[in-house]
Length: 518
Image 1 (cartoon, rainbow, N blue to C red):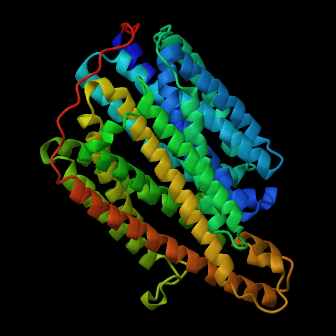
Image 2 (image 1 turned 180 degrees about the vertical axis):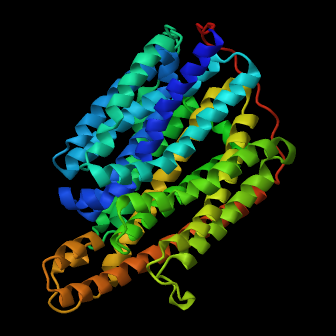
Image 3 (image 1 turned 90 degrees about the vertical axis):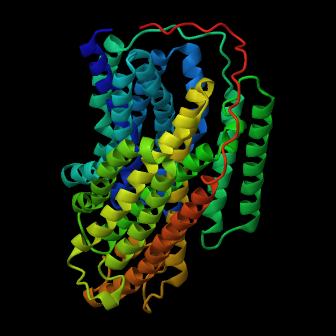
């Protein structure tokens, strides 16, 4: 393949990954508008966000091996088609349930695309130096997309209706489809390579059960039996998945990889970095809009300060990791992220009264976000190096899938846990003035809707009480984020000080390897 064609292909697959990453966070600034227009309750709000990473995390491990079987070009193009159809369905969803279903369908397309993007880069760029540059661009797109999501969502909501945050994907998908069909090298796949669909179903059942249990356990008026049933489903799904993987000749994940402390620490660091990123961005964008009355665009631009810290630190970490090793960068990144989360809390206007910060100055939050982003950039880059640099050559594709799943699980758990804590603490601590509508106890969105129908004096009293309760949840979520990052720094510091195990020899292939077509 000619040099120019290789780089145009890189642009095409980078655009695909950018779409996947943007849709991870694009709803953060759109959530208040969605809640009002679709009349979503607090649980539905979280499922609108979580359906996407949940389904993607469940399918990613199997999608990589399916691409080996049917061909990565076919997977990439099929994923784009599904992504475009699901985006259209999401844009015109008439109800919260329909939108949740469309987001789940969107994740199917994303899961088909993501492993294919990296595989196409690996088969196209034969020169190691060029390949490293291409993979670096590929990895950067994930961070850029996550940062652009809230900004793009805010910009579109300034000028169009909420469905535009999904419909904008369609013309991009069409262009990427045309470019991918022309530029991507074709290969017929390996029909003799196994694909384990049942394992994907098992891990999906485990994830859904676990997330549902978290949401029910933190919901006011929870049903203990429902939580127990969800936990049983989760335990059964994960247990069956682990047993099946240990019996398979070609498992989706080889648990022997986890015996290497460098790989395990990289997975933990990757998951915690995304836990903090997703959690901080979610709760902060809600507070900026619902408490401080910023527009979605302004909220998205402020939260983008996280990327201002993340991108340069990630580049620096990439240049240092070969000299320092992953340990100081992972541990240092998680410690820096802890400091950033605490600083963001302290500098959030109106939350910590003794600082005397006037609530009309939301720019105060940016130093904390820059520090938190810098820490996460260090940790994520070093985590990738720890996972990919220490996996055996015959497990490189599996290691890439494990890394991607770690990111998705971190994002999923950040939204599920911190979003649930935010909502449940609001309901548990809100003390509304007498005569206030009972619906205002459900969420701050409901309180704002109720206040619009009251007199100015009653509305002010109601909103003051609602804001105070929301800030209780906001404070706790950032403290939890800081505590989780601090615990992660201790864990990774200890694990990375352990001796590494002897390398595992590659097993004899059960099928004939074929050179990929270029």
